Image (cartoon, rainbow, N blue to C red; front, side):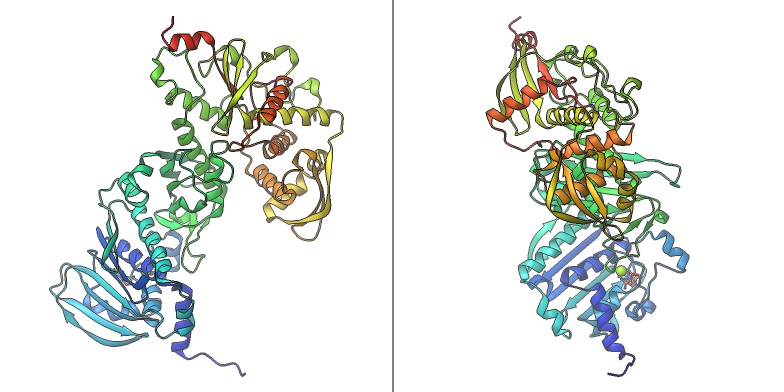
Length: 600
Ligand code: ADP
Ligand code: MG
C-alpha cells in the first residue's frame, strides 16, 4: 500500500484511542475537568456500566458561551499557554485532548453556564461532528452527557467487558478522586441507584469511611511526613492514612497514591509502602494506604503517559524514602511498642503505643540514633547497645559481631507457642519472653554468615540451570561495583550482555528461595540503601541476604522449629538484637506480672 496521510476522522479515532480506552477513562477525564473547574459538587451518573450513558455534572466555573465549540477542538485548553507551563502543571488536565477524543467516539451533549452568564450554552457533537449549538436553561456549572461510547468504533466496543466490570472500574476512579478531594461532594449513580457518596466535609477520614467502610477507616492511622534535601526547591510533603498491620489484603490495589492530588500508579512507591510494613505483615499480604505526595510541580513530569496515570519524578529516591519513612513511622507509632512495665505510667498505656518510645524506636530504625540501654523502658535485657561497625581487631573485611564479653547470654527457655504467626512465646527462669521470629532468625543467620566469611568458606548453592536476570541500569551498576562482595558471599554472577546477568549460584542460606527473584530483591534493597547501623557495604549486603533468607512474620512454625530457632538464638553472641538493631525479644518478668495482676 502506498504511504498516505490518514483522513482526519480516522486520525481522530486513533488519537482518541490513546485517551479513551473504556468508559472509566471517560469518567476520569470528565471528573478531572470538573475538579479543574473548581467544583465543590460532582455527580457521576452511568447506565449499563457507562456503555449506554455517562453523565458528569458539576458546579464549577463553566465555559463561556464564546468558547464552547473550541473546547472540542484538539489541543484546545484553557490550562496551558507556553511550553514552559508544562514544567509546572497545577491542573489535572493540560493537553486539551479529552473532550475532542471523547466526542470523536461518542454522541456527546454539553450544557454549561458560568455563574455570571444568564443562559447556558448547549452543544451536541456526534462522532466528532458538531450537530447543534444553542442556548438552554441550566444551573451554573457544567453537565456533559456521553452516550453510546464507541458506537462508531466497533473494534473497541467489542473489547469492552461486562457492564458490572466497567461499572467497577468507574467506581474505582470516582472513589479515588473522592479520597484525593475530600472537600468535594461526590455522588455516583449506576442505573439510577446511588452506589457511592461522600459528604464533602473536607475530612479525609470521612472519605476513607465512604470508600472503604467506617470499620476500615477506624483501623487506619494518619501519616504525615516531610523530606528535605539540598536538591529539592521545596520539601516533599506527605499526608494520608495507612492501615493497621491487622488490616492486610491479598492484593496491592488498596495502596493508593496521589501526587499533587493526581491519582497515579507507581510500582516503586507501592513497594515503599509494603517495605515500611516489613515484619509487621504476614508474607504475601499487603497494607491499605492512601497517600498524597506534594512536590514542587517542577519536580514531577506529568506528561509521560497517555492517560497521565504515571508520572516521572526528578528525585525518585527521595520520594521513595519519604514515603517509606513516613509510613514506617506511622505504623511503628501506632503498633504496640516493645515496652513494658518500668514506666511510671499505668499499665493501660503500656501496650497501646507510647509516643516517646515509638519516636525513639522509629528514629533508631532510621539509623539516626542507636538503640541504647533502657531506651524502651525494659532495662535488664537491653543493656547491650548494638555495635554496628567492624572494629579494628576484626580487620577490614570482618563483619561486626559483638565480643563475647559484652554479651549477655540468654537463660534457658521453654517454648510455649506461637502468636500472630510472628512471635514465639517462651518461658524462662524469670517470667515470659516474646521472641520476634523474623528478627531472631536474622540474628542467627547473620552470625553464621559472619563466621563462614571469617573462614572464607561461605557455602553456596549451585543452580542446576543458571538463571538469567535482567536488571535496571541502576541496579546493574551496583552489581558491577559490588561484584567482589557478592561473589564472596556466594553469588556467582556473570555478565550476559547489557544489564543482563547469568546467576550460577546463590548463598546456601537462600536455597529455599526462588534464586533469581531473591537476587533481584537483594540488589534492589542494597540500592535503596536503607539499612541503618551498617557502615560498610559488605556488612550491608550480608544483612540484606540474611533478611531475605530468614523466616518471616506470617509463617507458621512447628514446635520443633521454634525450639530449634530458640536453641540457635541462645547460641549467638548477641541474641538480643537483630542485625538492623531492633530487639529480637521482649521480656516480662515474674515481678512485673505479679505487679500487673495486683498480687504485690
Ligand atoms: P484539558 O482538560 O486538557 O484542558 P479538555 O479537552 O479536557 O482539555 O477540556 C478542554 C477545555 O474545556 C478545558 O481546558 C476547559 O477550559 C474546558 N472544560 C472542560 N470541562 C469543563 C468543565 N467541567 N467545567 C469548565 N470548563 C471545562
Ligand atoms: Mg481535561
